[in-house]
Image 1 (cartoon, rainbow over the protein chains, first blue to last red):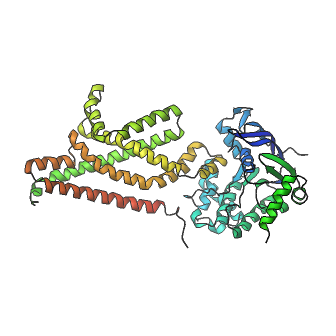
Image 2 (tube, rainbow over the protein chains, first blue to last red):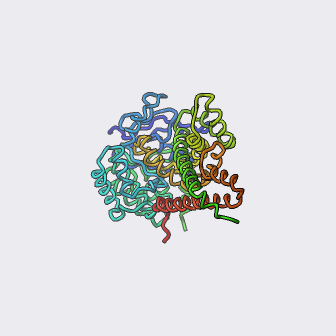
Image 3 (tube, chains in turn yellow, red):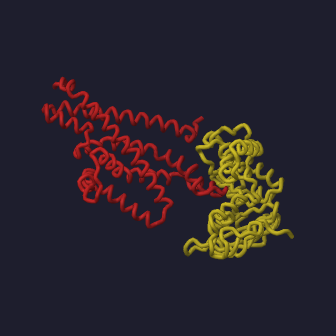
Length: 256
Length: 221
């Protein structure tokens, strides 16, 4: 077995007295897609945000390609420069897209290439164009976010992340803020990425995506990782009662 | 009413108006700059400095401009700060305006969605680049209406500078009134000048706002 791209070990996180992540162990293999599912408030997004240290974890360790993120040693924060260096290799896509509204689609994608990777404007512009082509937005490059649909905005956000050539991509409920008819275009881009062999961690409520695209599905509840297994095992023949209950509610809510 | 006196006093009034505009412009530009620096220190600086700044904001906002001006102009020499009336007036306006500007910027920065800052952090942007490229442009846009509004308030605070003998419009009008006893006419002209200035500022402000928010507003289709 290969070394994990993201190796999460015994991670705990507290908000004051609230125990948000409880001894989480999870390995994400290179080139694989891991979906994190579970009820809201279960800690899936918190765990995802710990992977690029947007959220601090209190104990345990998270390693990206073997290197611990956030801390030089347990309890000792790493310098900002080093953290930024590690974040370059981790792309993130947010539920609310978080595009910068004062920049065009192309400028949004080029910004990181210029400021973080030190590219010239011309080179960054070219790379940005390529990334936007790839998500099917070659004709919207000059648009500001206010003139893009939600699905298009999210695709720009994906282009912004992949243009940095990350080794891992994190998706935090990427389709939850979208109108139902716009979900498909974003999922298609994500599927294409997965087919190319991108390592992906996806927090999602799209069970269909988890079933068809994920290599492993992790179910969380109340800060605990209840089960990690193949999509078939988790979604079709779950043993744990909590997963069964979650799926039952999901099916009831989505049936008509 | 008799407006013929303005033939004689016209040049003095115009000069006074010029000085009013100068004081206002300098006080606004310096006050805004100081306010911006203060707001950035409050956001990113060490906590102890934040407390000092908070105290300064409370003191300046809690006392009348006239009192501040007296302290600066008549109390300044006691600690070796000897200023002519005009620089003292501009410095006074700057200090008086800065905490209000700082508060405007602070709320403007808070209006920038945290997610947009996080998105920049997530791709590895340095804090300074985030301030320059994301926080400032977006924060300034949301601050603009309030900035223009307070700048307009500041125009009218300049009349207080006449009390420390800055030869601005109010000072000229006061002299003219004392010499001609035409208090109504002179003060109506003063009002007219201010109305013109304020009107000009708010027009520029609106145009600026329309221009910089062009891409930020959701298009209605």
